[in-house]
Image (cartoon, rainbow over all chains, first blue to last red; front, top):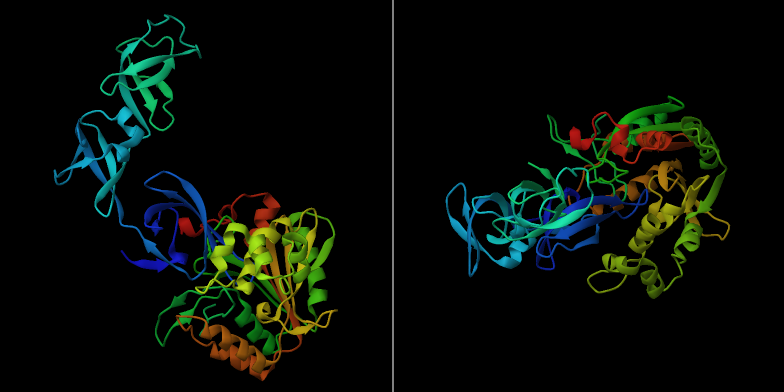
Length: 188
Length: 278
């Protein structure tokens, strides 16, 4: 991939620093009225999720990272990882568990998600903000109490992941879960 | 107000436009056309005009913004400073005194280093993790860049707290188009001021350099540092050679004044169509 001037970097740009791909979360230009200009970037490492602040000088060249998001459908998991199919060309790829990370808890077969590729290799799975999952098991529901803030554990069908739900939720209910915070958002 | 050549201020990148008869440049401030008018004998002049600076983007920067700029014939920087503070106070409704703080003392007070005498280690320590950014390939610290980064990140946040702070007596390398004079220690300094409020830079003023040969030499020196070799603003340089009357000029970031007056968090909120929605 090419290099370009730091002045062209914007929020969302994918850059290569220390042999890792980073996404720019925030760009801040800092300069005393005249004189040398600097850029303070807040960047997130697309491999580890770590964020850091990076200062660069105006006029510096930065390397762009070959990072793309591809729409894929999750097919099944096997011993090597998670098998996805590109919804455009039907090519299949195996995404290693490390790259799937916590997304595996909400990844149902047939689900359509974005897989992030770096130099063609899968490095992350981008889930929608929320998913609807069926409750496979939870303690019996406390009927009538729909206002309760008291939570109990529920096991989700398909992935076996556990989340916290209000005590009125029953086995077989479909619940909406925030994939980032794992919070219960409501019954569907 | 397109220009036949580029503004050449350190660290400021102009936009170039290609058209019939050769390129033109968007003004990074209306300085060149206004000084052409002053040189032509128009007397005091002012403009509230869009200005354009490639690559400037932050909570307090946009590549396009509005500049309120004016020139006072026969005035010097000190007299103009008083007028600018008066206007800023009226526009923002903010009061408080104006404290004058020379550039060197500002760094001593708020960054804890004398930018001229401090050793490389002391400068690097003041910068912390940012020191790596201003080291050259040979590992040596770029002292000028270090001072600029300290001013932007360690000093500016403290300026203009409950008052107007005017940074003055810039080192000659940061004189831009201001004349230089000797300070109380006998050191050459630029007759230039910047006014801050709440850590926000609002205005930049000069007692204007009228020595055209010196001005062109400074522009040429800056041009040599540019990889894209921006064009010479020949008509501006001719006007300066014909003679700029003794005058002082100031550029006020108008959107920043609006930002300050209304307590806005982002400069774009002071604009109808900022860069990202242009």
